[in-house]
Image 1 (cartoon, helix red, strand yellow):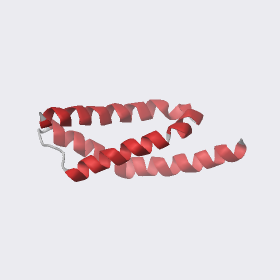
Image 2 (spheres, rainbow, N blue to C red; image 1 turned 60 degrees about the horizontal axis):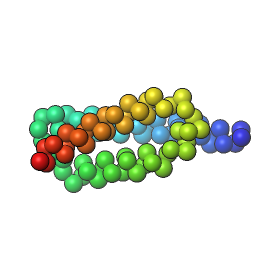
Image 3 (cartoon, rainbow, N blue to C red; image 1 turned 180 degrees about the horizontal axis):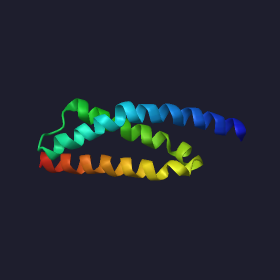
Image 4 (cartoon, one colour; image 1 turned 120 degrees about the vertical axis):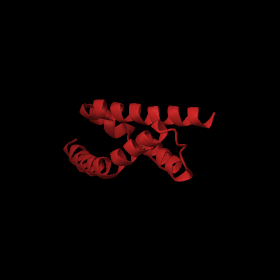
Length: 91
């Protein structure tokens, strides 16, 4: 169990850096884009798909470390807001 905790800690540290430096700024930019009435391009959609797929694969990690659930939930809410607005713009 200690080995799993150590591995989780390393994984979470790396994910936090990626989240802070890449994912959150890009996601906030996408929200600004759709709030301005701009449609998402293929690169934006690919990014959102990657984030979605990554989040699904991280479920076991989050289940073992529920202290991160609130933060992940807020990010998922942001992601959902972007997708909802993007769908509206496509109509």
